[in-house]
Image (cartoon, rainbow, N blue to C red; front, side, top):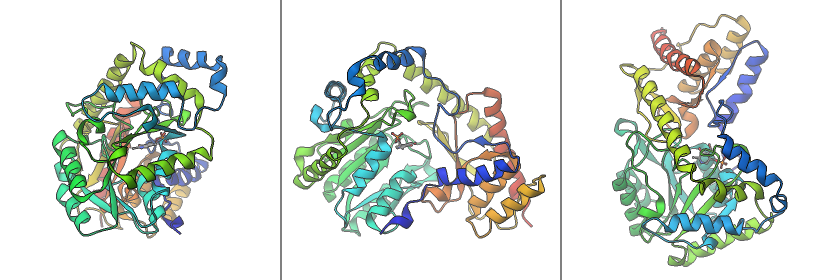
Length: 427
Ligand SMILES: Cc1ncc(COP(=O)(O)O)c(C=O)c1O
């Protein structure tokens, strides 16, 4: 029923880009959050841990449906060492990547139940929610003029006027904006959830990539007694996206019967698949429990912090855009100020075949998508239009992932120049 809502602009642009590649365009991929694809190699000790595991027979076998028992014990212990909600190993549930978890979390909700999520929204969540309900995703605003912080008044209003809302989703650190929410905001959202008897989902896949002085908070520390699901994974922090390994931490399951029943249905669904991939799960306690791990996380956070500073400098003084410096994750969103884009704008593209293809591809598309396609045709840089993130603001998302310093500087400067040139081309 909701099939038309299964849109993933982050990947869809790849199809168009490959068509242009056949016409001779050299591409720079800035559309996807894969550190390895952008040249990062996980440290040798992490790779050695993985290769040792290959020689251990259990890593080849199925594991418990919920996940490897020792790993769940390790992760539950990590939650319990913090101040806040405690969990048992049975409240940790593994999936084949958070992508798989997201599909099940929305797919097994009661058909009428809606989850209120942010706009802009990471499309895996918004599309899964929309596909589950058969309607457009219901959203609250993140405010570009306030560092992309959630508009809590909007959350309150949407919940009050929509009885079908059963939960609120937040992503902190956020994809696509890189915003990290301070304690005051997440606690306000928890109190709205408490007052309205709804549960919370926090996507925390970037929880260990926080910098720029932003608060380092985990959901178990601020949720109080509201039932909630924290989503975690290793794709971004080992980084090992190809492992397809992520997990849910179920918080306050015992506080609400409906919630407990829903969570049990997720596990029942997982049983039909037997289990998630074993080897990456076995690697988690060995890697996260290694004395070198905190240093690894710190080094990466510092590195993204420096890159965020560089990016901020490049965009400083750009009169056409709003660019907030990220406090976490490895994305940034460039938003065009209202009313700047129109259908006459373009960028010069020398190769006539590529130019014709871009003209064809941009017929009748959203204004920011038009900019993104001209940018691709003129520079080969592939970014994702902001309207692809369930958002009415226009702009695009790029990453801080490029490992080659010169190339990263070239990407950021090319983006800045392209913006000025595109806006000025208005006829
Ligand atoms: C916010 C967020 N959640 C979930 C995912 C999916 O992660 P996984 O690789 O575990 O499927 C991503 C991937 O980009 C993401 O950005």
